Amino acid sequence: MPLPGHEPPERPRRFYRTAKVAPADGGWAVQLDGRRARTPAGAALALPTQALAQLVVAEWEAQVEVIELASMPATRLASEALGFDAAARAAAVERVTSFAGSDLLCYFADGPAGLVERQERRWGPVIDWAQSALGVRFHRTQGIVHRPQPPETLEQIAQLTRAEDDFALAGLVAAAALFGSAILAFSLRRRELSAEAAFELSRLDETFQEERWGVDAEAAVRADAMAKEALALGRWFAALA
Image 1 (cartoon, one colour):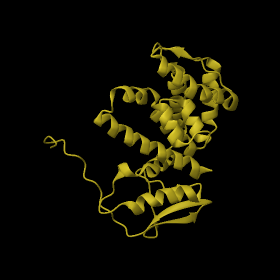
Image 2: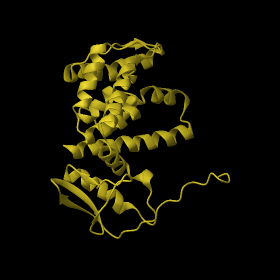
Image 3: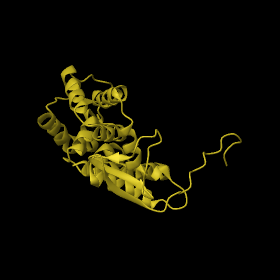
Image 4: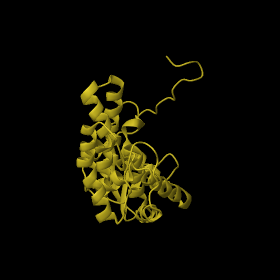
């Protein structure tokens, strides 16, 4: 029960009957009862591809009596992308680059041997892919002590991130934060890995521990929510193509 003065915000009720996609201004607009939907900041909810607009429309159609924003990841990403200005884009590029600077995939365990072997077998090929496909060289280390990445690696990641359009950039930021890895974010963006595979690799350590000690119920709920977010990001990137 929430404390007095800390009641959760009231969820908006569904105020429309139909949600549809319509061509508009060289892209695709989301229409609610024939009128353009807008982001919380007031921008017209318009997407660059029909597939992306369909993702957003499907979320609006799925709402019942109240609008559950937590169940609308594509709408949230679209709103973020449509709100980018120069400063917000620069901050997004910096955030993705920061994850490259401490990328999850570069921190190998120093034991037990089974975990180290699994990381080498599963993470190693993805790091190699990043070197060949992205033109970056990552330093690997063992343990949790931070090891800086080469400045040229971070600059290349920044350039690659900067080259993305607003909609792909919004997805990259979300993916890097979800996985703790710019490498996995780019592997999903470029469809080298599926959403399921990228998420599995981001939880390699946790999965290993769960196999040994069992699954914590709260952790399982969090992991399920994160897995759904990963799947949503996979759909987002696929719809951008």
